[in-house]
Image (tube, one colour):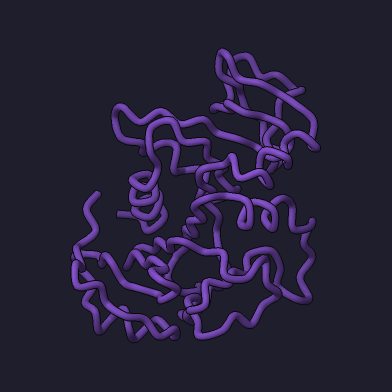
Length: 216
């Protein structure tokens, strides 16, 4: 199975019926495609939507676009509002979970996901607010870079988005949680051994006594 699909399917299991969720651009947007039956979430977009949904390609509304600038739809009963109200929702702790991609996460729960020095970026967007205001911060990313370097590190090297903010990391190889401040391996892919995960993870972590295989 494609790594991104595997990650999105496993992240979908983290979301509960009735949750208000912010999905970041890229891989996180795939998560909504894999929700379990009976799980109904409200998608929030920091540019002023609650209740966004996939765009109706036959009836595209040019005035509806998500925070990534992509055309979107809005569910019946959804709402729109200004950025001030949107960020009041986020900063007020009313977003149950946010799912973001990551460039680096370290064993202290720090996240770097918004820029690589020397490369042009449009800006941080709402990431800084989301990871400090959401109740559950899920980082969905491939385990290593395209060149095979670790992305789960002892200490982030890139500019931080926020400190001590990450709750859960989901990769194609493993699921980690921060439990009592300790990076803890709680699930691993059926075709990946603990030794293989250690070999491509720079960060120090402990293994949960209830370690399970990823089930999707």
